[in-house]
Amino acid sequence: MFDDLDAALSGAIKGAFAETAIHRPRVSAQYAERAADPDRPQHLIYGVFSAGPADDGLKGIARGSDFSGTTRVASASAEFWIAKAEVDALTALPAKGDTIRLTSRAASPTYAVSSVQHTDMGDLNLILV
Image (cartoon, rainbow, N blue to C red):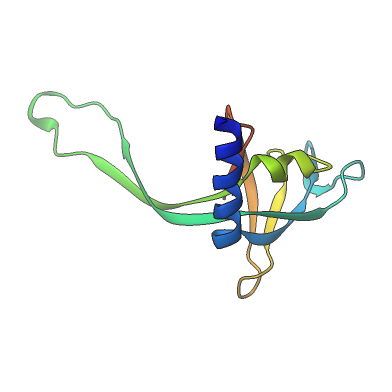
């Protein structure tokens, strides 16, 4: 019953928020730019893109009264969530170093996948840079 509820909810989210992207698999070689992966062709995927501010604190050493505060790094965080039904239909799973191009956005921005997070429900969350 829970799997059916998850599938229905994922379908509703996909219908309301998902967008088309082109997944381009790439391979890496030492001392060379990443190139298209000949074993994994590019294909369309559907998922939910989200981006927002991120704030990280840097840890350092403070001695006595030399501690003048904390250092914070402000950046942006971007992710692309893919529902289980879409993941099951993929011919090649995204991997670190692949690119995702958001075709429905102005100028079709391209992001590199820095991490692939698998959930226990079968979804994928791609951390983008």
